[in-house]
Length: 168
Image (cartoon, rainbow, N blue to C red; front, side, top):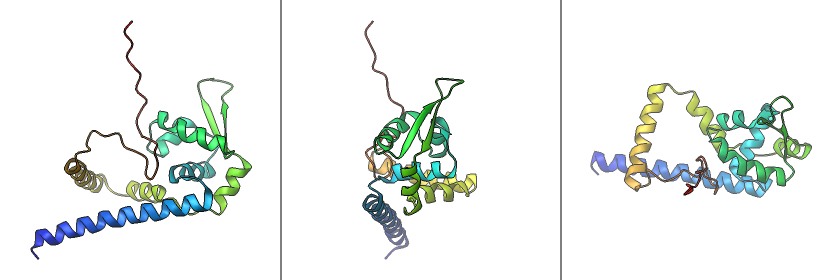
């Protein structure tokens, strides 16, 4: 095999490994907690420091605040968290885990997204640029450069909600 073929095979195998860990972890999380990976990630972060502003949670998860709304709606409906408006500024919303949320987190598995973010945050800017450049090339090869990114193993899209133009 030529060197280029060997490297292509290594890249493909690494992509397979990434998909494999994401798929296995997602199934395990859903089986053990009835939550998606991103939902459990919210619970894990809130366990560390809550109550927390929605904007702060979005920042820690590298998500648009608008993306958080769907995640929080589903978690609130499951009784895992509560939202409370600030007395000082009604625009500010704090989120906190319920007792059920705390109990759910105690025996839950690790979240791949959390491992990924904490690992990436430890890298140098040059290392991150190298990874970003390589992933950008893969995204271009697949022709999905402009596609809105979905959260890992979820139907949630990480993009601000677009307002429809009106003809007024």
